[in-house]
Length: 254
Image (cartoon, rainbow, N blue to C red; front, side, top):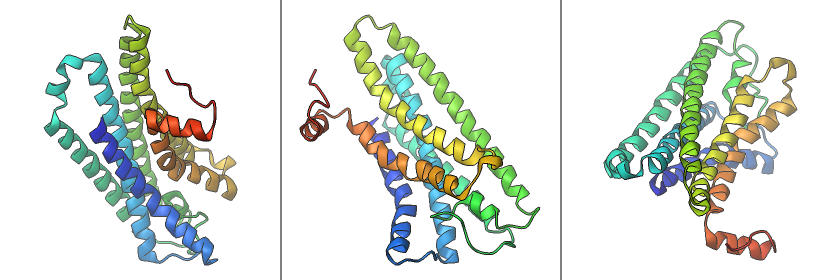
């Protein structure tokens, strides 16, 4: 799990670095400009890191399933070499998926100007600038990607159904608490990223507005990478002690 958390931290750091620094610089300089090459790179790296993060969260659910439901086989099924191969596959899948999306998006002719109504270059906003029929192939690609993400989500749900069934069979409450404490941070991160991303890309066009699009984009592009370290740090006793000094009564030592 620590190895996967290291990869998650790197993906979170990269994802938030794709959008926030440029947005802050534009705010400080009272500018809304970004170069064409900069927009291409921003779309590529953001798609790469966000999708790789979701694939990694799917892999981590499998890791938790093996650790809790089949603990005696953990070293056999998830040894060091297997973990490295899984992490490499996650990064490779994210890279290929982002490359495909980016190449397809920026091959479309833009007929509606060059102003993106967003604080970063986002594919749905770029598609609004394309010609009336040319964006359909990218929509098909988005639908395929949505189906892939949905399959990952189903895999995570099935894994946690098995995990919770195994945890509830643990006779001691202390053992149940320890198992839940291991899984709940990961489940919180998955829920936050999935709910915000699904709403951002699948919300009805009838409720779309520039302000709502901005809020939703912040929720799925900035909030999960920023909150993930906090969610996982809540398991750390030293972090709890430091937080309890800032907020008296926030935590009680067990």
